[in-house]
Image (tube, rainbow, N blue to C red; front, side, top):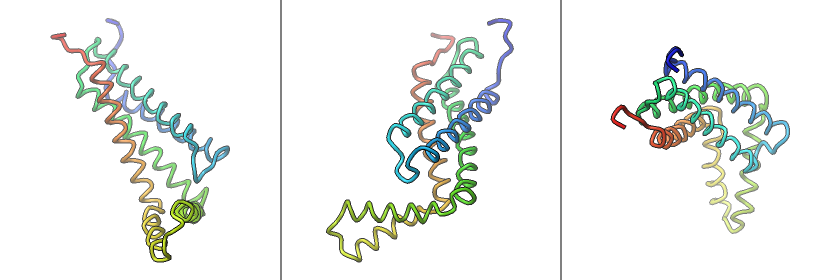
Length: 175
């Protein structure tokens, strides 16, 4: 390892963030082509979370290797969040294109599915309660809200994964 050039944390974040962003788009496209766009299967969600975890862990591991085997929890969190942020921004751009150009009726269709789900789940709602529930659900049926939620979820999940990874992989000179 002595002859290997050190790799910067920024390049690791960029490379693994790009990789994870494109993986996320591929998973979304697979769901679009083969799945139920409005009610994704739990296997798809689990696969996406697993792939995200693997890419972040590999990125943090790469940072540790480039630091001669040393890693702090802070470095792990910074790297994991960087990977999560870059991938989230790429995925957010995909979502904006998807909602506005590919599946332009997405939000109308989601609203219909949500209304049907509310009616099936709560058959005793009054008309006013049903209207209020539909109105509350509709607040999130736009590109901005979906992009914001995707970025926030990515950052929160990236923080959790990188924290756990950092706690497991940490190694200082004192160790």
